[in-house]
Length: 82
Image (cartoon, rainbow, N blue to C red):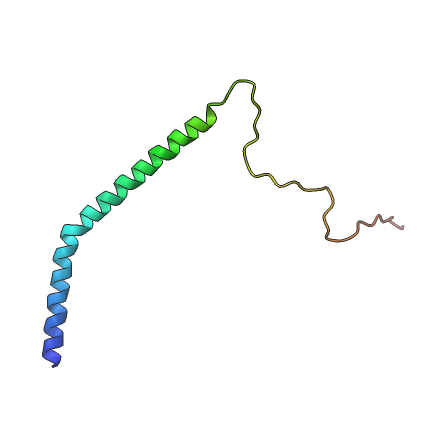
């Protein structure tokens, strides 16, 4: 029984090694190609976003409006006593 398990593990190891050498480079090449396509698309979207009509004013970004005072507590003036 133990001998069968050891033989199975050895065969499985070499089988995965062979399959990895064949399919891993194909998988990596496919992923790199997809990443390059995404990069080109993002760059073209960025360029198209920057091309705007003349005289049109837009504000890009998600700016949060904040007041000068926060709700952390009351502001108390103090005088220094000498």
